[in-house]
Image (cartoon, rainbow over all chains, first blue to last red; front, side):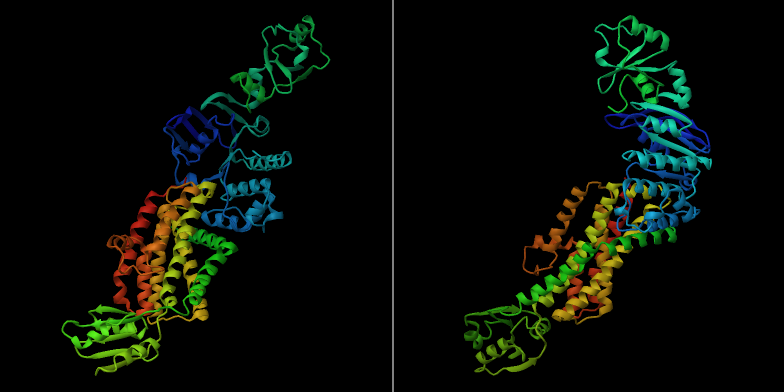
Length: 292
Length: 332
């Protein structure tokens, strides 16, 4: 549906995006992941036609971005304000007038749960309500492809789960979704395929499950820092310090790793074992924390 | 250009303007307060000096030497009688003396004129009388105050608002829709122009009721000046807002432009007699031409032909600024 070929965006000092290529299949949710400054937003804004690439090309349905794309795409930006002193219903009505083909207001109100603040001034709605309104605007032209740039950043957990629910509903309508996020959990919940970006490049690509299976054979062991003796040897496992004075061992073979711990006299009383997450994957691939 | 999209953006901008009560209030209150202030401040004691316009060669008419030597009278040599007659009619001149034909003009409603006339009673002069009401400072300043209000509304209402839209991402959001830059900008221009015309008409009527000022010309012509003048000032705002994305910088530039206009466009005082450089500079400011045209219609009763030069300059300003503004306009 959308094809990006060797996209680059260079500014005077930095290479924000440095040669990325991918294909987005129709009806899937495609995720761009990475820490702040990885180049996700720049990449997605080039796809949206908002930024012009320094080099490389983008094709929508086999053709360069044009009028058709503008009419068939729905975009939810990361930071956008709306005109002030205007009611939610009036904002929707204005955007409806911009497009030839639009979705009925009642449907948008239902999908995005706008009913309770439809008559309220845009200045007087909460963060979660504003994100729902921006989502509704992105859906207003009944788009074929929907871009969501960090849709839940800054939202409380409740609002985040609500928004995920709305995105799942849109997915169920077989729309193509392009999502950027720095929450690995969000990508895991919503995306069929992801690319992980760091420093303007793609460092991994695939379905979240496949990527985890490919990079982790087993599990993650966490232990308090003080239970490890000085000179502890992880024997081939990756050892990573985390927050709250705990250490993570990315185990390739759980039996062998635990045997190794016992052998070196480590107390197992506070040991925890969990499945690896995309956060761990990012750590494994880049050696640095996702949200540092 | 889609009329549907233009109207949607136009409607939204109108709602925003009308519902922003604080800003809206200032649009009405400020000019009314200024005008009332001036009406009271200059109600009495406007001149402590007699003003006499003298036509003709004093050397050739020694019979007037005694009169011309009197103290506390300002004698102004003049060369166009018709202009001066109007000034006597408006009380801008207390007496007009024509030494060539031994004539004098006084306004029967002017006390100063009466006093001066007595001083000349020993000479045989053909007396001509006029009875027009005095042109007070407030009559003169009204077109300036209204013009200034229009200027601020145009510059900040278009310039500052577009920059704010750009900074907070409103423009980015609009850009991702099929709304074109042309549709968006014309919606901004037309909306603001309509609002300025409505506000100015109301303020005009309100101040007229309160202080009652002179209006000798055509109201239709005044409306035409108002429309073309506000368009030219809006286009200045548009040009400034074409690319800027910092509200602080925009505020600075807008002030940098509005202050000289306020001081040099003849809003508060006439630039007659000021340095030629200042007068040339004033001609570069759209407000100068607008206030000049409006003032000449209101207190001199000028017709369309008299103000055509000013109107043409304003149209030219608008065309140049709008073209430049639209060409350099950036959504981000």
